[in-house]
Length: 436
Ligand code: S3P
Image 1: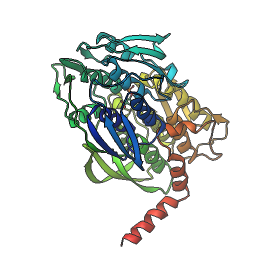
Image 2: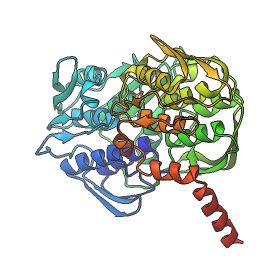
Image 3: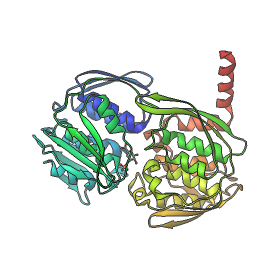
Image 4: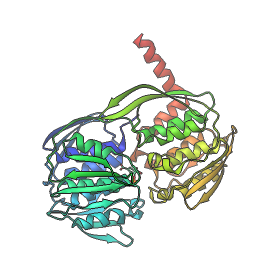
């Protein structure tokens, strides 16, 4: 699996704030991460590719980001935008953020609100969207902020702003979200503590005016990219695939739990630690799946995996009910509406609700397909999920635009194609034979 997108963004950002050389291997070279790299260069860091997934970052030091000379183009990437807004918010610089049509429709108010409390000033487009201009505060004011939405991006924006803020910045997280920022901040030497609050919430405190030391980082494989192949193997009869290098941070592993509850055979092999994160290889076998009611408490740990889960549910026996997924409406597309429409066009039986989908699985049959071209709506995960659905479709599935896939998984099409032809399996076998 290619490098984890969330971790790749953070490795570049923190490397750019450390003094000295950070070496990164396994970096995801998708467009979203390249947007982060370009922005950090525009603010003074040196961020260079030295080989396949091998990067070197020479940082400027916390507090020393430079004024970018042109607007920061965030492309399709919400993570780049929201985390970089946090960084800029506590530096004495002004930056404009622009992005594509999908990103320009996504809510930024959720980061504008806490960062304004820290002293940053914003001029945003109507509805609190991009394009926007941000004038950082110097010095910024430390805050204690309780997250109103379960969002790792908002948490990370406030913590990153806290790096160059005097005193202690605290984020209270009632529902745990991915913790890569906390892990990596501690790894770079920031003073950060995580405690349990009286109401069970996570209380994350960061000491400001931090000094970060450069690190050697190996980025683990992305579980959100693995999700498409896990689902593909489960639903295509006769499949058995090994997926190497899958990050299994518990704040990201919800899909595997849910698919196992549905009857999926997913085996973990060689559990190990890579870059301070749990990783394993997965062996996934075709399995008859049953519909279930998905526990909404698992949503944050699989928030990007619902499009893939909806495909699995469409092929399962019986009904799958999901709820508590309002956040999916503000991702790269409205993923509840986009997947309801795409799967319906593929011949699945889907009902859309305000906060989830109910899917009557077709249980072992193939999807009819062939009802027209599916709109991927500048959303890589809609494109990849529906490509997987195409594997179990009689007439095939046609997508209007597969270009968004390069934002997170440039090798996806070649890998899926190779796997569908059995080539990867044969390659793997040949390698095993050579090894013996
Ligand atoms: C991410 C957090 C999640 C996720 C996104 C990546 C991150 O977004 O959907 O793909 O790297 O922090 P939210 O914070 O909006 O839930």
